[in-house]
Amino acid sequence: MKNVYIETLGCQMNKSDSERIAGILSHFGYIETNNEKNADLLIINTCSIRQLSADKAYSQLGVWGKRKKTNPEIKIAICGCVAQQDKEKIKKRAPYIDLIFGTHNIYELPELIKRVENGEKVCSITNKPYIADQNNFKIIRKPSVNAWIPIIEGCNNFCTYCVVPFTRGRERSRNPEEILKEAQNIIKEGFKEITLLGQNVDSYGKDLNDNNITLANLLRKMNSLEGDFRIRFVTSYPSDITDDLIDAVGECEKVCKYFHIPMQSGNSRILKEMNRHYTKEQYYEIVSKIRSRFPDVAITSDFIAGFPGETEEEFQDTLNAIEELKLDYSNTAAYSPREFTKAGKMIDKFLPEEVKYERLERLNEKNREMCLKSNEKFINKKMRVLVENKTEKNGKITLNSRADNNKIVHFESDKINIGDFAYVKVTKAQTWCLYGEPV
Ligand code: SF4
Image 1: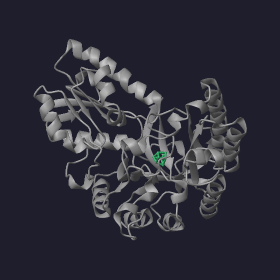
Image 2: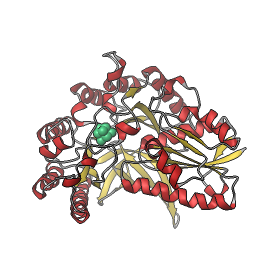
Image 3: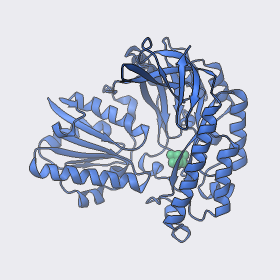
Image 4: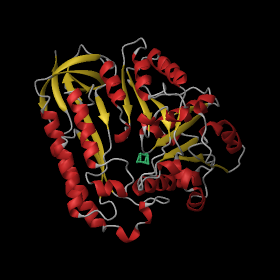
């Protein structure tokens, strides 16, 4: 047996890919280890959404490269979006690497790893997407209460700032029967929460030429599976959220009343520049529709500060949107130019770094303010939560849980366990979490 250590950067899709990689390698004698120092094979699964993420990958490779100098037997591999995009650069910067494989080459691993073990340096990058359902390798999920199922990969939207359509290809939906089979296994294994995953999850089924295959119908089928579990889905594209999807969320008691809908900017001109297919007003309409249907829903978003050409007034529209829409939480980032993208070529419109980061700071401040307000709404309310883990200090057990609307809730109890659903009355709100007591 050999040990493999997998370092995963970036989004949940990468984490899910890493579970698949661990599953495939387990058929070839590799056991996943959390201790990189014991590893025979080191893999970094990379993200290229921002320069910072890509830099992190190169810096980790540098550390591993030094280790390989003293122990040449160690094999080093890189995969994910940086590998898909930058193979020549990787070969130049880290010539000691044994294996480079792209986002579409995961299922070639059995062959690739054999060649690497025979001493070959291997690079396999293709632009032709794989069909995940054709492969029967098991998936090794980390022990947890939450499991993730990718249901659609890739994206057709070509937002001008984003590399995903280049690194992950066009949208490919998985067969619903395969997804349901995977979900049944997950429930049998004891997981209590299943998150359906896609870069643009509500596009699910559009490429399958069958009007009945939609995210809404998949949620209905998942909801009818036997078992004590709940369902989430991320990430939603604003204009792809249909009335039928909102109806399905309402009908299905196992589906959490939670939507993650990146707005990116609160200004319609900037949204157009970003090639987002909705206006500020349309986004407001979707949020209002969801809020009027589900009073305790949480709606979270993503925003970019300092997109090329963004004026101070246009940035103010973003701050206003976060406040007016009462967004429960937002992921924020300063604009980071990416190779291949349209916005990455708008060099004459790039804003100075200090302007971008000053705006990001104000964006974060607004986010903190709105998170606290959002959390305060739940004081004295009863929420259903799922216990994810626990901490013990001075004989007191604190359970760390997540409500159906994704709020983090801490409470004390020695009768409730990890993986239990419980009801909690909220007693205190802070910016990033709630405190409560079991009821
Ligand atoms: S919707 Fe836009 S931001 Fe999201 S993955 Fe597709 S191109 Fe990227």
